[in-house]
Length: 327
Length: 287
Image (cartoon, rainbow over all chains, first blue to last red; front, top):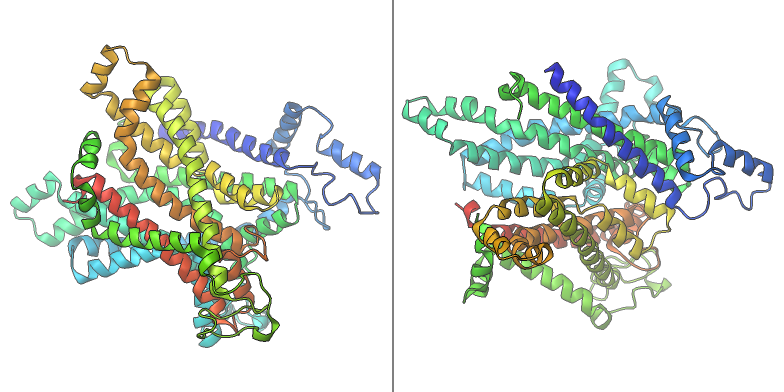
């Protein structure tokens, strides 16, 4: 197991290089120099200031040297300073936003697992029943519905008309006056809609995948053998079949991470949540290059880590890998 | 396995009937064809000019004069949606065209060459696959100025991975088949081999993933427009009508409702068509 993890960690190194190259290339793709954009007509920015910025970002040097400089700063976690008025370090700005994005995405994943697996299993077991057909319809709609539109409808329905749930932000105005448990409840109410909206696409995909997997497993030889041996149907379905059908779900969860992280831009913008996605959107609109590049790299690293965790979980759950058989 | 049968079955007499007999293909195809037709005919069937401002009919709810109501500038939302359909159609087809081109080339080379080339190309594919591409798309479009062309190109450049993997897998398995060995024995050149023998036999799954890819591109474009990085007002797109709908959510539900429905139905159409085609090309799954 340790050997497996270290092998995977080493395998991440070329991926990290690739990610930095893409992010670096992105900045140089943009027309005009980052140090000059938006400053041309700013009387407070003198020619010397621009020159200083140019040399800080090494823009006066050849491209490969610039990349190397940027990379060696990254190695010590120096993502540079934001171009915005506060001029704070990129890493600090991102660090205070990450918890919001992570908690929404982790909650969304938990929600997906808790709902999609039972739905998929029930659809497979009761194949072609009304339940199965209804769920198939749900899956197709879940795939096709634009998440921001679903969010808007839920805001109109549950937020504005019924006034059941808050529609924006993380806290109520009276947050400061609340007791501890009241605060937690308030936070939960604010997160409910964003988590559901983030989860909807994954929910549809995952329950479909679970259904197919379960149907495949049920047809396998060892299940037929178990039936022939007179093992009760409940044990066959929920102990023998489920175990094998759940395994691929772990990989799929890992693959859904980029979508979730990317989707957080839309969800956070829609519900005005102060997360990494909203920060990215603001940075993009303000052409805050260091911040944009920093978030891209951090987002990609988070995705890689998520995939790594999924693979480790898979290896841990699959006895064939756990016991050292190499594929 | 069944992939080798595709040319034979697809050209068999009565196959169009078989195609249309499939419920998913029929429903999905009808939706897709209708939306495409409405988009193409928009200038002739739109009841109003989509950018014409008329202050006397600001924020009217749906009525016989304005089927989907009017917006804050009195523009007819139904007409704007018809023109918005053109954006979706164009972005979907061009973006998928680009991703097919890249995916086919990389997948074909990887699958045909095998060995180290294959390993390297697939490594690169995996890398792009675990990149939060929406971040990349957003940043590139914002830096390069939002325009429909940039959107098509960027979506195309970031969505070829599925096709590449698919084509590679098909080529790898086809390469072991006897008719390929026979062709190799006859001295057929690699380019001709790919173009004439391998590609046609891998076309089924590629077509399925292309149709599903259009659905994805339509969703991404609407998301970008919603964020204000897509088609720029006053030109209409489904996403940017929704953005204006969001700002007037409390007083004008119709501005949010109808464009969203249009996206949902269109994407659903492509998905149904794709699923139907998958079923059609791979009867093994039908069981």
